[in-house]
Image (cartoon, rainbow, N blue to C red; front, side, top):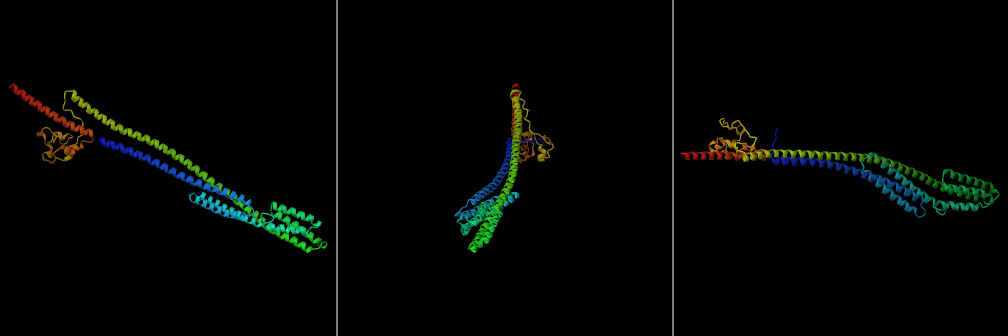
Length: 428
């Protein structure tokens, strides 16, 4: 179907196509930007989780170093610091995990939190045990052991006990250098040998009961030291195990995060590539459509202008053929108005009824349109038939030009008739 639009409507079509195309491109760009913003936000949340885990591990290492270097007078401050560090990083890990909707990462962070909590608890207990044990020979249980040793070595000053005391000193030193159940058992075994020696020599030396009491006092003091010392060693092992669990859980979370970040990066690259292709293809399509529309407008406009110019040139340079008309797609007025005038020359045909039988007919005697004669239509320019034949500005120009030529043709005819009458009168 041939569609004819006015120049204004054609421009509106071009504008609508342009707006729709750029709106589509804007929607694609917006979706791409939104997806990239969401990916960036997810990346930031993943990075926050990784940072929280790394900070917790660093804090654990720092607290462990301080716990092993704790000295008299600093234990209470260190215990308070451990409580603060524990609370701070547990909350930090929980906050970071709450922002993540990835179940595996959340479970991993929960494992890190549990291990970190166990680690700091073990460190705090270790510090408390070492504080109870004493940080020197004059502090805590070590002071009691030192006093018992001094009494024992003074009470067993005879030469017969030197070898036993020397062996006990050696076993005690080995225990403190590397506390273990075996080292404690070695001290107790040596102390038992020394006690049996005291019992054997009780008959030779006076005060045997007092010497046995000194041995038993030292044994009780050592048992207390050994018990606390071994508990501290066991807590060190618990802390080390908890730290290893924290490292393992943290590494697992980091592996999952790395996998997720890789997937996000690949998805972002693919999305950016698709968006780029869409924008380029859309831009090319828009350009092609605009070129086609402009060509449609330009070619149609140029063709009709050339046809009008050719007709005007023919009228100007030719023999003045006033029967020529600019082409117009006329409407069957009898069908449009349902006039029923079968004797009208325009009845059942698509012709310029307005200039042949209507108000624009220069010869008033030839006006036969019933609507004009009845006064229903005073000017055919307002008639629906005339309006329907003007699809665009060129039709308007062609119609009015044809009307103008009709009037000129009639005037020329009247001039010829007048001239012929004058010539006839002159001859007579």
